[in-house]
Image (cartoon, rainbow, N blue to C red; front, side):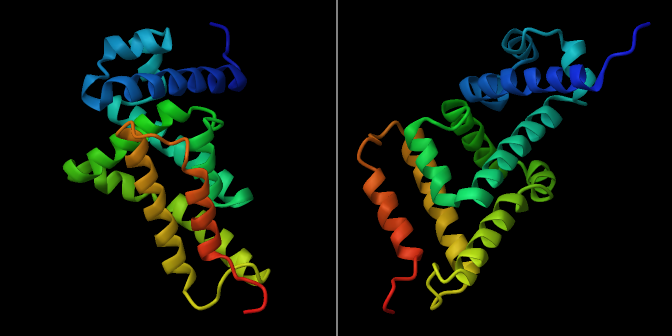
Length: 192
């Protein structure tokens, strides 16, 4: 039997995650049946579950993957940039990412077992946000009258509010100036 390369396995895993993202985003966790996952990924259930133990493991890996992508943007450009990317549609999977994010929120609220499993992975975005804010503070760009922890919580609440706004289908064309205000509210103003 020929041996499969790691590159091939990684590409297959990416194919599964991309298809599953679209499927979970469109149908939610409950509606993303194995048949729909097969259609979305263009792979058999055997191929899908060779890489992931079960549907929950697939969903958790997808949510983790999205959180890691967000953390990368945060580390380089800050959490407000993640929000700007959502508005502009320039994030790699904006609509599907939004669906996954909403499904994570729903499951956190309704599924204690999932909440426990997710807690192990959810710290990544918070850590990246705090590190970025600490770097901004050391650079003299961040206001210093409020703790980094409070500023990180504030930005994450704004992100959740934006996600809810977009999920409700409310207009988003005029939100860039709102994000300017959010960004300005955490910056240290020269002359202070």
